[in-house]
Length: 330
Image (cartoon, rainbow, N blue to C red; front, side, top):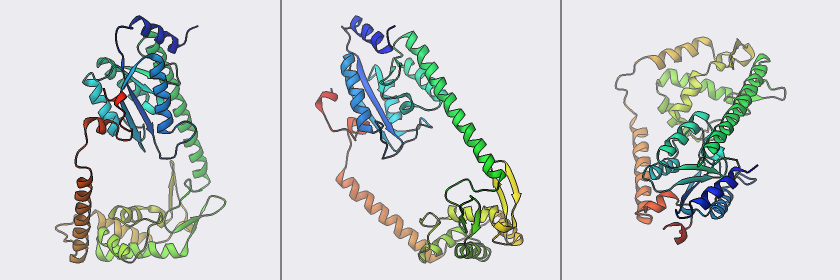
């Protein structure tokens, strides 16, 4: 039985008078993917496939540190624009999950590209939508991939539920104020607990999350992750019911007195302050000046960067990671 690759080769030989223009799409979700997942390896294998098919490569779209959970990716969107313009005939990628993860996205993107006259071709899977059999096989593989991901999610959900029933903490990093002990439970960290209490008390006095974040940063105090404080990270502390001993993981909710760091009265008071409408609350002058200085420094840095790289061509915008090779720019 012939493979999709062999069928496509036959179709190519029948259409030898027409030059097929190809675009390569490569993606990694992090900067350190191994075992053939790197951008360079994906591009190399895609180039080899294009050469074996007799396809001429016009574009190489490289996507680094981008999740396939959404199609709202910079180079992916540029690729769609080029496809709509009729700039290429077939999109080549190393594996389906480099292209899209969601079955809905896969089906919708395949339909949209087909309307633009663009086919899909996978290097490692039996996918080539230039044929009706290839399109049928494409949907089967996409469905199987979606089913596998759903099974993984279901197993993860069940595992989370099992941990929650035992009142264990599901993540590696516990909230500020706690440490995770060997049996998976939380134990109050006395030093961090004092910081949590300070944040609640300070918020009761100032009624301003940005101001508290500013003060902590001025004192050189970091978050649990070792980062600078922001209004959002202060809000995460203020809103977390774990500090009154209310444990909520998965769909399990219970009260554990041994987890309580602040009084219930103080927690509800801060919630009342937070939910109260704030009218014309002016930013303190010192914090305002610090914010202005930061924005100014960012702007100066932007201007300097613009002087170094004042303009990007259309080709550079499509694949800036790829060295300019005249063979691929025609």
